[in-house]
Image (cartoon, rainbow, N blue to C red; front, side, top):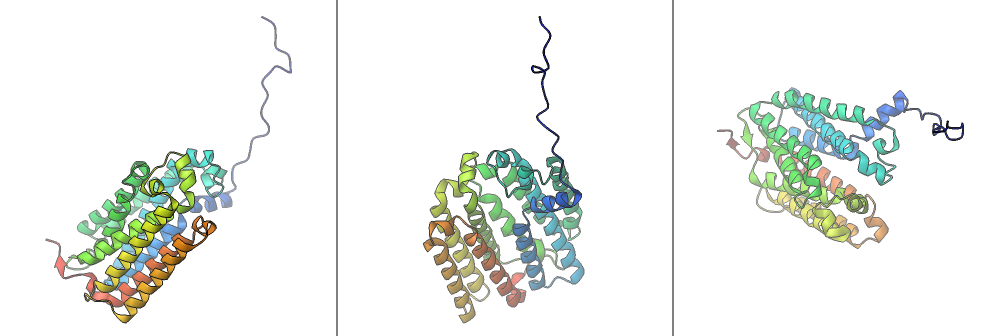
Length: 303
């Protein structure tokens, strides 16, 4: 056995790469929370809270619970996907680029979930249970269902329960009408199909085969448009049983947005235009719900 020479001794690959600065870490953590969907859902919850007549304090607690739940789901998603995102070279993912640390994001997800529990229950036991069921659906998506043909189910459950969370926070704990629950579930399911469009190829390469990925880009886009249109029709016709002139205009806008998503060039389909269209439709639908006011409660109360 001979001694090793200097050339044969193992060498360091180079100087250690410094971690992100404090400011960069904060920005990276925020980006890892999926800020656009989280903000869209939180704003939708705020508008629905106003529509169903929640007082300012109750509305603030409910909206804070929704925000905490969304942050926990977003951080959980990025933390679980870190290896796949790194393998795919995702430059838009802070954990893949090193702008955020896995331990920090995982801790943030757990902390947001812990904060979400008392905020949800602060709206009352029935309302809190409903909201936590929706948050659990989001975590179930991250942990398991996003890779299965049932990837749409957590979105349908979480969005469908959102109106009930807010109406059950009212005195008397009324349930929302069925048309509102169905419309919210359809809208959420459509958002799922739209949200995955820019990443379908990376998802398939990483072994994520939810229902949108199995349908392909064109099929997922068509499904998202149909779901959003069905949701819009329910939201416009549900309160009175007929579509008003204003509702007909909203349906027309939805059809136009769907036409852009389906008839656009391949480059458009690969971008964020379909997702942005669904988010815009959600904002329009929420505004319509604000105008419809008391129709949200439907007159039913918790047993």
